[in-house]
Length: 306
Picture (cartoon, rainbow, N blue to C red):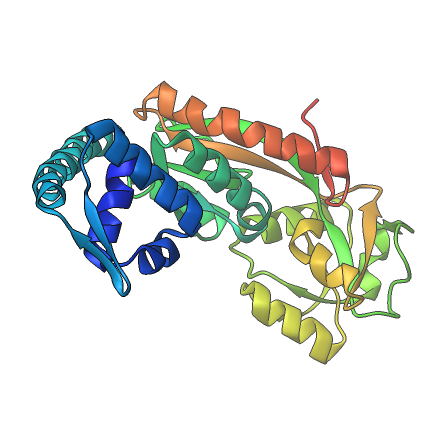
C-alpha cells in the first residue's frame, strides 16, 4: 500500500465513479483501475462494489477511508510544520535598480534566486542617486547604481562599464556602428535628464572638459516620456544602448557609438557596510554570470572591468 494508491482510492470514494475520478486526477481509467485492484489484492478485501452507475464503498472501504483521512491529515500537519521552518530560514532582501540594469539584469537574477528557495528579492526601480541614498538610509539592503559617490557607510563594488550612445528617430544620425565624435554632439537637438541626475552630470562634465556646447532642448527623466518625445519632436538623446535596443531592433530608432572621448558609466553593486557579507556575496555571485552573458552576446554597449 502506498500514498498514490490511497489518494486514488480517496478520489474514487469522493466522486463515487472511476470515470469522474479519472478526469479529476488526469489519470487514465485503466491505470486507475489497476492501482485499486492492486490495493484490494494486497489488503485481501473488496473496497468497492461496482455498480452500473458508479462505485459504492464496502464496509471495508468505509473503514479504510477513516484511516486514510487520518494519514492525509497528519501529512498536511507535517508539511505545515516544515513550511514554518522554511519560512523562518528564508530571507528577504530589498534591491534597487535603475531602468537599464532593471531591464537587463533583474529578470535573470529573480529566476536564479527563485531556484535556490532560500532568499526572496523585493525590487524597487529608481534613479541611481536616489537609490544610493536609500541604501545609506537603510530603506534598501542593496542597489545597482551608476557611479555612486564614495561614502563611509557604503560598500561599493564595480560590476561593468557602460558606454553611452547617441540615438534618434530613423534618418538623422545614420546606421550604426558609424561612430560620432563627441565634439560633433553640439549639432544635434538633445533630450536629456535633468541636471541633478548622475548621468546628466557625467555628460555635462565631459562637455565642459571638451569645450563642447550641447543643444539641450528638453529635460525629462521618465524613460517612456523620453521615448515618446524623441519620436514626436525628432530629437536625439544620449542613453545606454541596453535601454533602447528592443526599439532599435524594431526600427523605431537608430544609434551610433560616441567616441573621442566616449561617455562611460560604471555600474556598481552598493550596500550598507553593516549588511552581512554573505548577503552581499549572494547577490553578487548570482548577478556576475548574467552580466558576462550580456557582454558576450554583444547587444548592449557593456564592457568588462579591466
